[in-house]
Length: 483
RNA sequence: GCGGAAGUAGCUCAAUUGGUAGAGCGAUAGCCUUCCAAGCUAUAGGUUGCGAGUUCGAGACUCGUCUUCCGCUCCA
Image 1 (cartoon, rainbow, N blue to C red):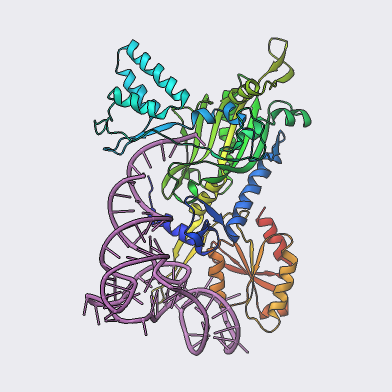
Image 2 (image 1 turned 120 degrees about the vertical axis):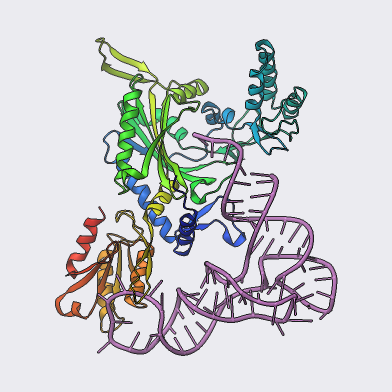
């Protein structure tokens, strides 16, 4: 496993120095695991977001996009399983410092007991869990002398609850319990599921079809680290693809292939990726895998592809008492229409922030350009041109003799089509290096010859080569290169 | 949450045994008719993370606190 901590640190520093990513609230010492995107980072992120959106909703003929709210009715998270599955009581052993999920600990112990006795223990545990009686759970563990596998002691901390979801107060949620708590969504997917019927009916969508969404999600990670890889507030790009039950295997394979095509279209070689199949499946899935990228900190998940069965729609149907069915008029092999059914779902879910980090990791290079007489180096971000924050640097060779005026004309011509950066300060070499550092793929230099024959120098970021082209050709050349 | 390390200018780091904080790079303004960083001049920028204590005097010593980093723990 590649593990280059220095490179990772260098990328983090570079991101801060060149306006890509800053620690959140830095003047107040920062907020753990929250980051802000700066002037270049937000352009990069937006370009990735737009690229994904277009690829999903414009280049596919059966996928539409939505933008659901972050706040959702609290019952949503009961239906999705998040309330029950992700607020597990935990307990720590004080000697080994090992942390356990209380249910796992007790279940493990129960397996060592005679069957009847074990079943009895599980039953009393579940009763306590349902009642959220943490003191009772601790007592149960201690009275049964359940030991830590590592330290072998019964020296436990109190049972504590770790909530995955952030909650907040909401003005006036109706609720019999009288509490006004709502959650910040921990995934965007549920916004798609609760709108399944709205979109299907209003868009006259026919199965198979997909609904895409990009948006923020929030998770209380127990430990959040590794820069923007694991943040408490992050952005997901998700697509739920609704299919006929029984066809999930082939669609799962289809989307695995399709999503990998997207990744390769970022110009990242296949060798930098791998699929990782989940052995232990989440509560909603019948097949799942990750697309992992070889970060400087090793292979890590960027995207997940899950076969979610009809778990979500079925549960929403149950909790909301609204039929989540689709009427399929197509005739099946038995000569009859498929009729009403709850669709199955294939999900593709990619972390936008992780994708940005992937692009940064792939793009970042410290290059040694030294010669025997003169040491030299540069840091260059080799972003795909279509995703680079700035597409074109416009640089008059000197700031006199009318060169800035010509450069400004070019600026005016190009800026409505793509993002440009104008600079007339410092030596040309310095300016090139600054453009390299933020990954600008092209620079145009206007010199005295421009005034004579209307040609300019174009300088390529990756090769550092330069050639003369007509000033008039610049806009089209760059525009073509960033498509 | 536990253990370890560290917090001095935007960045990288200095500051003898405690004696009122300095450099390089960077930034800004200008000079040099300048096509691949480190030429010249000038300028700006720090209650040394924060709070207390010891001391005539604390960046340095003590305590507390916050934050970050590295491990461990958790992770749909």
